[in-house]
Image 1: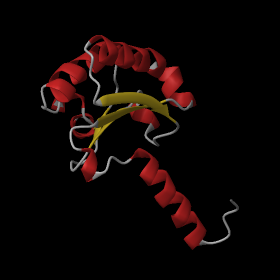
Image 2 (image 1 turned 90 degrees about the horizontal axis):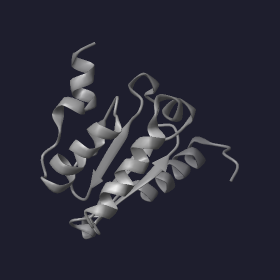
Image 3 (image 1 turned 45 degrees about the vertical axis):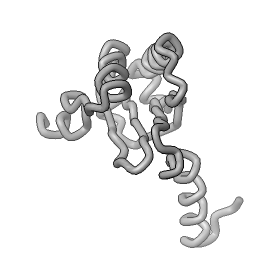
Length: 127
């Protein structure tokens, strides 16, 4: 699709949002995305995605999926992991490692508690 107007751009934006949103009818489902544009990969995102998928599989978390996405737009905070859950705001985890990702699985995904020390809000407060 060629973008010729602001309306065209907004249509593309809405289509992209639908791809990543979890609808309220998907209660209990969670989606984890890892930013894997050039900056994310260079910062170490690939081992994080592998660790997340391994942990999801080993713990048999059938309501959770983890996948890669392109640029999230916050290069200075890479590697970035975002968690989407129906009816709740997106949670953005920054400066992640595979070990921190395991804590997110246990604390946030399984335990239902956001691991605040790893969120973008905590990182921004230290700048």
